[in-house]
Image 1 (cartoon, rainbow, N blue to C red):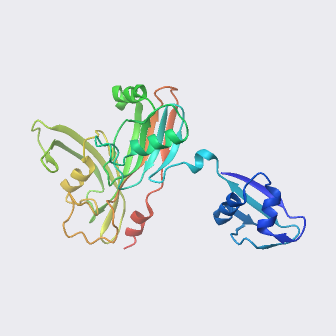
Image 2 (cartoon, rainbow, N blue to C red):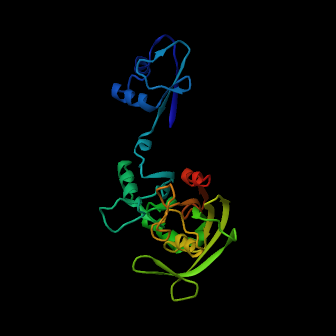
Image 3 (cartoon, rainbow, N blue to C red):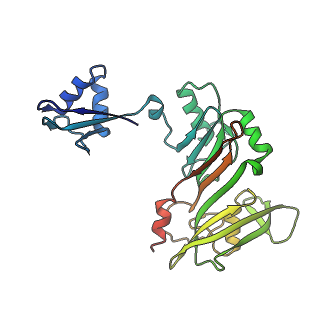
Length: 289
């Protein structure tokens, strides 16, 4: 957001003042700005006929064209010519082979088209539909391939936070099992049954009467890994319709799993990048119950 500040030199109404200060801006656009983006002496003001007095300060926040086109289903945390880092909202698919499905890829492709960037989004890794959090998305097949060829070498830290049912003991540990894809869900075995080894490290950050707030770090990135492993501990993720309690009575209406940290070495520039998002407020609110 760019902010332009003006000083009032004579008494007049706000809309009249703004039209004088921005003669190249249409009356319609100024009214749009007045809805959310105008401040008088630091207080947001949307009243067209607000009476200005001499000496008052009027500030106008102006979004760039690219800012106005940013998607609503995810937050673009970082963007350069090679890749995105996005904060995916819960309920959005990462990727789908069905062209009619709304996904991270289709949303970003719409943004790339609207901002006249001659490239397309390419999936690097995925989050479950109902998991929110940080993802890296390439702007070319080459960038996606560079991540795929050396994922463990490039991604130095990847963390999740979850709210799980009950108080987990011990408060810190490792979960290790072999996962295989079943017809409806992922199946877990404590011994090698020909599936893929999955390793999750966990640490309880906070507990309440009903819940545990858990930090989780993955050694492997298997499908539904965290959700399956917390079920193995007999402390499933809150509001998990597949691996959780059928009679889940939590007051939240989403899977309580969020990818909050992502650290990696940029595959093109070599820069070390670190990104974090705050824990969802709904998770923290649960810990007060």
